[in-house]
Image (cartoon, rainbow, N blue to C red; front, side):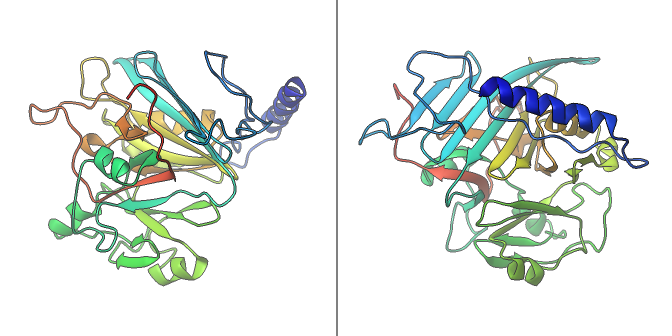
Length: 331
């Protein structure tokens, strides 16, 4: 069955290559089919979508594997599968280490925003790993750090958390500001969507059923096409972004930067990696000191150096999925 799936995927990819794209556009990305990882000790039996067929035990229904030295993390239960892999690219200015996370989910699970102070979003801030631990999240990434813009009296963008409009002041059209305040919306049925300023209002998002809207950007990929604006953000920085490769299949990326082993990257690099992973839409979250990818409450990357310290910036919330009381084995 797996071999047949590979052949079908290759045939679809070949068809996309042979079909000419519209002028100025790239061919749409093809979502990647699930393929089991290379076997390792204790790997459980899974179904054709990569989820557990049944709980492992009453005390610990999920299989969890965390190997920071080897650069590999895996969580899998009957409705959520998170796979993270550390990779390295050699660019003209040196090596870049980055992390790719494939998050597959089904049933009632969905990505959403998780605040440090859920009753009063934005009133309290904490390190992203602390927020993830507070909510017992399986997987999380940093958000848009809108509180910095509010504090500095700048446009915060459209900010919605848990179905409530927090802020709405934003730009009126697409731009190349830093950040451009493009919008990422998340829905309880597991969808995500991306928009530029002026396309939707806060009330439009609520009417469409959005639970959360993050404002940062730029959009990296839209409808399978890489956004031209990515070329305007070429500075080598730690980067964080998230994309969708199909129903119930999100892809996260975190690029290390400002440390000895990794110099960071521009957004064109990030967009290209997400296209390779099959994303049809993708969005830039805040980067630099804010950037973080978290697995079971622990940061997977090595934070860069900021003001002589190596730590992530405190922030009001994260975007994440999955709640569990299990812990990484051995912790």
